[in-house]
Every structure is written in structure tokens, then in C-alpha cells.
Image 1 (cartoon, one colour):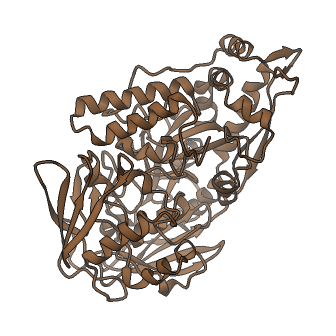
Image 2 (cartoon, one colour):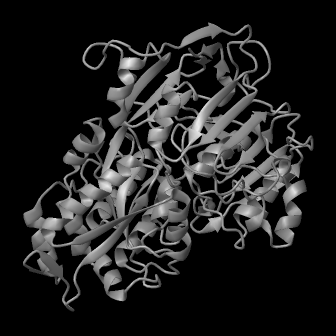
Image 3 (cartoon, helix red, strand yellow):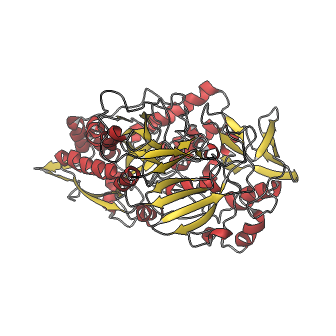
Length: 592
């Protein structure tokens, strides 16, 4: 996730369950003219705590986690929690995007760019007291991430030309990675979580790893190396994390107060049904930091003083909100519908029919921007301004449908075989904004004669339908953003874990998909920044021409932060929490 609460930048795409903390473009305190009104109602007071050590931070989750196994997690409801519990060799700085040490203390790269030697920090320990050594790193890569029997979503980004890294450990503190070819995002990708061999090796050997560390696992059996431990999970209610006393902070990470990191004793994540519930809880003083929808700004801005919080509005994020189509010939839906979705003219017609500016204005109160493709304009290093920019053009959409073999009879669209074009559009119930966007899509496709039935489902149920049973037709969903386009490989490669529209392709099913696969192979090994940008420009041009995913809009990233917390600081790339270890509860909220 971009700028997730535990700090650092995003490496890989994951399903976005609600509002994620996104790319920071600028901070605006909404307490001035224009949108501020006089505070009214009950007034909260903030009393200073005697020490910044201890205390807690309370957050909300929009759904239960699906797993406590970081090698298997692919949705933010799980990864947001796991980011507190596990870490990798490296981390991405939220200030400049540079790669910094985490479990590693240093590294060297040889002249060929194909061999990198890491030295681990001294005295690293797992939360159960066992030593964390290079053997754990070798185990994690060779027996988990590269194990074909393990359903890990990150395997796609840990290969070069389809070949895994060679990982070895000459001694307990040294890890050697060797790649078949130079690999441009290698250091960034080695931020993937490291797992404990002494606990998980038996499960891997017995073929039980895919069910290990499920949400039914007792918390004391989840052993990590992050700043917090899992203390309690009550389904449908809360996840409670406690301070890890054996945590060793990354080299160079230090805070303004004395005492060991993390400063907080606990992080409580309350599970709530939707974003409106998170707003009510926050205004009632029952949470400390919350992602805010643009539609909620007008409610929150007059209450910043009385309810003791800051409201930080940042620019459009790198997260994607998109439509996609089930092009999977093996999916349990009618074959003629799959044929519609595999028809480029149909997909382009849908893209031209949508009024993205109206979506921004109606759903997000103007606080957002249309996004033309898979790389947000906020990612200035890699965005291609030459991509096709779809806008509301019904005449062009109708012409495309006619050229694609469809015909309009009155107000109804039919395919060449006489099937009425009627589709089911699914989205998740927890996001009122996505529900509103889905209804707008339904209304905008009606003039084309396309009948759309919107079916909202709970986030985890929808994820299962999409990733496992493939029983869906059209989907309105979200993905977290990535700084380096290589993180999109899991979505755009034909073999990618999140290749939603046609999963499990043994070979690319279309020439354009084969070219995309080749571009990602080239991009991962090209070390020249100019040539590498040109490679990913070409991918974006193909993506917006073929539109297997119709990108919609990116809302402004907005966060409400209680004034009881310190260590909440806007950063250029990492949202408002540079690192959760540095967050401290410096005040106590006194409710009336």
C-alpha cells in the first residue's frame, strides 16, 4: 500500500478495501476560510500525558482480515495488519523513495549488477526469542516465495526473465542474491516479508503452508519481527496489537523522545461495516486517525477544533479505481458474455461512455481527478502523458459498438447472435463512494442500450469470487498504487496473481498481452532510466488502447488525525505516518 500506516512506500499491488493512505502531494489544513465554519456541539479536551512512552492508537478496518500469513495476503484488510508484524531486508523511504536498510544493515552490489550481498543487523530476534538469521531469508525465498505449491501473490515480482533469484547464506549474518540478469528494482523488491524457518518449515514440508497462520490461529502462535505482535483477534470486532519488546529498529531510525521504539504499547484496529461508521466513531472520539472520503470533508472541517483533530487534504493518490471485465473463457458465466468482454470495441465503448469529471464532482465533491491509465499522473517519474485520454463521448461509443457487431434496437443493445446486452456489475458494500460510482456507471451505459444491474457484496466475499471462483461479469474495484511500475507485474503479466480479467493464462492469449509480458521483462532488467521509462510508456499506451481495465478516478487522499498523537507528519511519498514506531500518544482525549 502507498503510505500505509506502518510507514514506507508500496512495492506491489493489492486489493483496496476502502480509502488507503496515498501519495502525498501537499498538505492543507482545512481550518481557514472557504470551508471552515464555527465549531459547535460538544468539545473535546486534550490533556498532556506524563510520558510519550506507552499509550495506544485506535484505527478502523472496513473488513476482517483474510489471513495472518504475509506470503499469502493480497488485500489491504490483511496487509495493513501484517505491516505491523513483519518486515523485509529493505524499506522504501517515504520522503524520497530511496531504499533504506531494515533487517539488513548494509549491502554491496558487484560490477555486473547481478550479485548483491546483504549483511543483517546484529542481534535480530523473532518475537518468540529465536535468532533471526540468514537461514530465515534463504528459507523464505527458496521454500516459500519460489515454491510452486505456495499461492503467493508476490512471486511474479521476484523473478527476472521468469527465473527466480539464487539465494544463499555463507554465514548467519550474510545473504547473497544472484540474478540471471541485472534487475532494476531488486533492492526495492527485497522489502518483502521474511518469515521464521524454525516455525514454518514443518508446515512447508507437510504441504500445509497455504492454511498456516489463518485467522483462526491463536495470536501467540503468530511470530514476527516487526514493531508489534498480534495480541487478540475477535472476528467482526477488533484486532489488537501489542508492543514487541524484542524489536530492533532499522538502522538510522530514531525518534524525538528517549526510550525504545515503538513508543506505543498498543494499536487497536476496530472492524466497522463501512466508511460512514468510521466517520461517526471518529467524531465520537473513539478513534485517532481515519482516512476520509472527499464527500465527508464538509462534515468534518467545521469540527476540527471542537473535536481536537487536524484534517490533512493531499492531492490525487496513486491508487486505482477501475472497471474490469471477465474475459476468462473458463469462468462460470455465459460464453457469449465472455465474447463481449473480449471484444476491444465493447471495452473502448464503455470507456468513452463514462463521464469521469461528473464522477469526481458528484461522488467526491470535486476533490479528485480522472485517471487515464494504470499509472497515476501523480507518479511524475513514470506517467506517460501521451496515453489515450477517454472522456464522455456517446457518439464515439455508439460507433464502436456498431463496428464491434452490436446493434441498437430502440433502447436495447443486442449482440450479433441476438443476445440482449445485460451485465452484472459488482463492487464492495463497505465503500459508499464505490456504490455511487457503480450507479453512475449504470446510468451512463444506459444510453448505449446496455443494461447494468449493480450487485454490492462484502469485500472479502467479493475478493473470493474474483480470485477463486471467477463468478463475476464486470467489477468496480480498487488497487493500491506502486511507485515503480514493476509492482504492476502481478496485475499486468499474463501469469500475474492479480491478472483479473483472464487469470491463469499458460501462454498470453492475445498478441498485445504477449507484448506487455515482454515489456515487463525488459523493464525489470533495463538499468538506464530514460530507456526504462520508454518501456513503461509503451505499456501504458497498450493498456489504454486495449482497456482490459477502464480506469476511472482518483480521489484526493485525506486523513483526519487526532491531536493526541505525535509522529504524524506529511511526507512526499508515504502519507502521514512516516513510520509507526515513531508515533506517540502525547495527549489524552477528555470527552464531555
